[in-house]
Length: 236
Image (cartoon, rainbow, N blue to C red; front, side, top):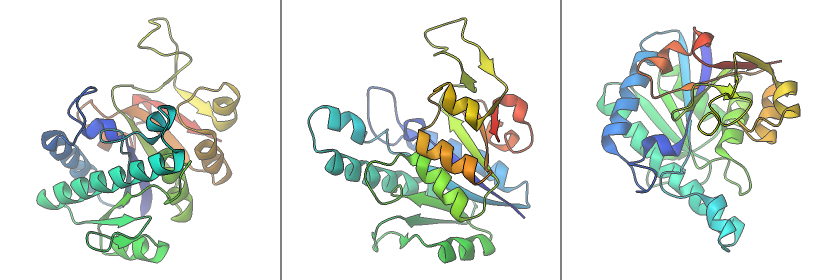
């Protein structure tokens, strides 16, 4: 059975760029998209979610907050998002289990490889909250680390309104060129910024492919597993 990681930004769950919080309708729509992916069968699905719709630790640190405190607050935001996704999946008939990188015993079990594999064996979607449990690491790195730890061959890097990797910001430069394929070496050397260096290095060293695509196009989460033409494929 194929095992994959779906990486979702926190902003995709939010109400708007200016208003922070969790938009229940957006979460439910994402859960329905994940259900379509789940119904393909022959897949074990892990989900890593960001927390930017609630709190961005890096931005708070730039405003003078201690970076460690800011990052822990961001990790707690990802736990809230993970619980929202877990609940929406269950409400839509998809068995799911949230695991957190630090102890929040009232709401979720602590992550371990054995617990994740047990959930996969029970045909559950596993939702990872809390990042890796340490400051200074992004949720992109979390996706790469969980992917490597669990032997995943593919990460679906779902972007909120961007359909792949470009040589410049397509929102600012209408002539920006979209890449259909990239190697990790090219990604790092060109400093394309689609993910941090730690995440890119982990994926390169563990031979994990990444497809970067726009999750706002209906059906793309399901399609990304088999049709890499919808975005940019990154591999060794």
